[in-house]
Amino acid sequence: MNAGLIYLLLLKASVTSFSGLSSLPVVRSDFVVKRKVITDRQLNTAVAVARMTPGPLGLYLVLVGHQAGGVAGAAAGFAAMITPAFAAIGLLRYAGQRAEQPEVRGVVRAVTLAGAGLLLATAIPFARDAIGTVASAAIAAAAFAALAFTKTDTAWVIAGAAVAGIATRSVL
Amino acid sequence: MATPSAARLAAVFVRTGNLTFGGGDPTMAALQRELVDRRGWLTAEQYGLIFALARITPGTNVLAFCAGAGWRIAGAAGAVVAVLGASAPSAVVAVWLLSVYQTAAANVWAAAGMNGVAAAVAGLMVAGAWLLIRPHLRDGNGWRTLLTAGMAFGLSAGLGWPPVPILGAAAALGWIWKEEGR
Image (cartoon, rainbow over all chains, first blue to last red):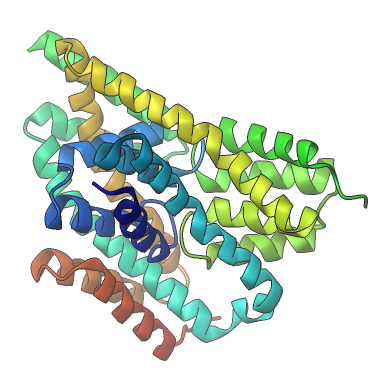
């Protein structure tokens, strides 16, 4: 896939999200559903590896770019990840006082919540692909609980899931 | 305060941005210690404003924070140094890890571990959505919160709408329907 197109598609995903993995539904829509250049499992892998790497969660955009277009695609993904950050300078110069306006807060809040709803919808095909046994369902539930209700670092959750996956295979 | 050199600025952002697990919030907390408490390159008020603006900047919040902080400390060059310093090394590591991960997939035991990780990612995604929703349930806007997130979920999972129109509709709704209890 052309690096320029990868940049534009990942930039679209990046600028329509405000936190964490909320860009994921747009990425899946463009790369998995419409253009079919990567699979759900590859997208899952990109998220998992980004979670294992120290640094911003948005790193998964670099990995999606790499899967879709090699090294040039990774560079495009990196550029798409960092480009929106520079908008903060414009906000800092011209709009600092407006950050507390009710309309601005309302937009950010509503987009964040809609992003959460979209993330839940995106989790459905991921779960269909990854959860096929009682053991894998238990791993998914444990990962949910660890992140939602404890302060456990996600790198440990990922490592624990890998160990559990190996243990399950050795037992069954 | 004298403007720090690009090398000193880069050293702080490279170390903090690439060695902190857990995403944006722990990194921004670590940067508060480095930039405000230890070095005095930003005041607490400047940090607070940049932190708030990073939250409303689209994309990866922690990189928006780095751009704003770098710009405030050392101008446009500072912004570029801060953003690249906080993200480029970990991007290289991530691509390397991806290749290791894909190579290891041929091994049956590694593949079993990866299946466990894939299941965990599905759980982490649901948890990520919950963590976005939870703070808004506690501030007197509970039913509005559930309605907005539920609408987006229903339009996507139920009707197959693409994400961007859903986010646009949510933005319009948020602009018109102001918050209560603030």
